[in-house]
Image (cartoon, rainbow, N blue to C red):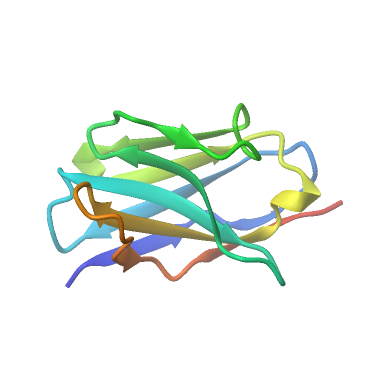
Length: 119
């Protein structure tokens, strides 16, 4: 059974930082893209970052480029999202997801973790 389990969300002040973790299990992700999505209240879910499991081909949405960094630790089967210079508009539920590199559909999803940026 494939599982993606996020952790690390919480309340942070504007300008602060958080690091989200996504622990992956149940299959090999060696040929997969790992991604981070977010969904704010009343808005559609958006992809904000993705990377191949080998660390290649990083992608960032314009809204987070230069502030967020996606990385992975293959030994721990974990993907991270380092979020810096957080803004109130970054408030959302953040989801980890995975898809095979040859398939455009994101097949596996975590349960989500809340990030709230507020003073």
